[in-house]
Image 1 (cartoon, rainbow, N blue to C red):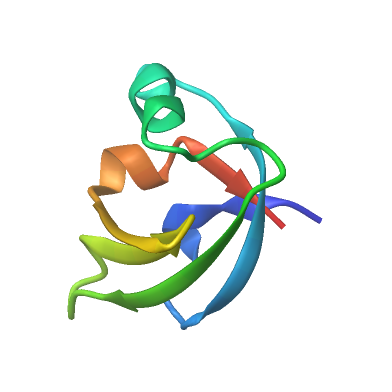
Image 2: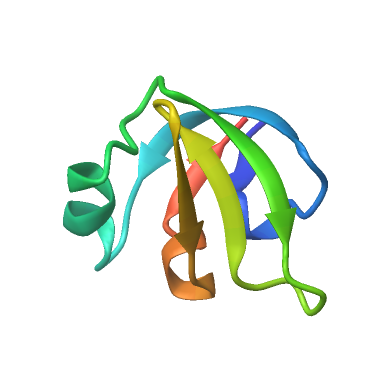
Length: 72
């Protein structure tokens, strides 16, 4: 079952299934590739931005970017 990264606020590890939308090229350049495991570190009190760990570094995503990442 897949959902969007923007829908997850609790810490934990997830696997990327697909990157879609207008921000896809930028996200792919940052290392968010299908099949990659990301770890949700924390989110701001209102939900965004969301901080994730991917490929050994921390990355902070805005709501528009997190809505482009489909995870399971």
